[in-house]
Length: 106
Image (cartoon, rainbow, N blue to C red; front, side):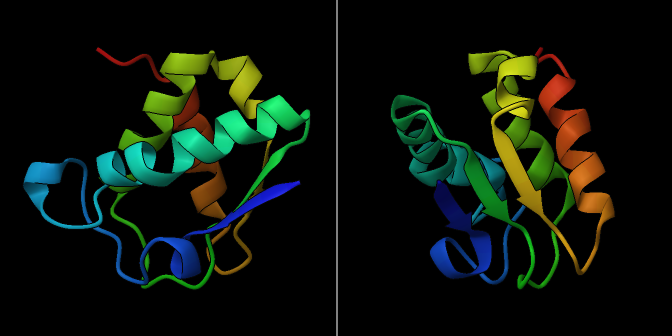
């Protein structure tokens, strides 16, 4: 299994949607960490575990941008079936991620 702990591997304080919104955006997370780790996990035939706990919280646009891109690039069912999401602190983040994966990028 490949793992991303967002608080440890990316940022304690995540940003908003795009690079233009400031540092640690959802777009930056997708480009610099999420996409590559997802590809690595699929090549190894394992799931990607993402730990959402430990940050100062998330702007909904951060999660939306990162995971809509992942779902759009690799297909929503493919992505959803190959992730393990951990969010014990705020369980609704898992629902937000799933909604984003299945949302089509315009």
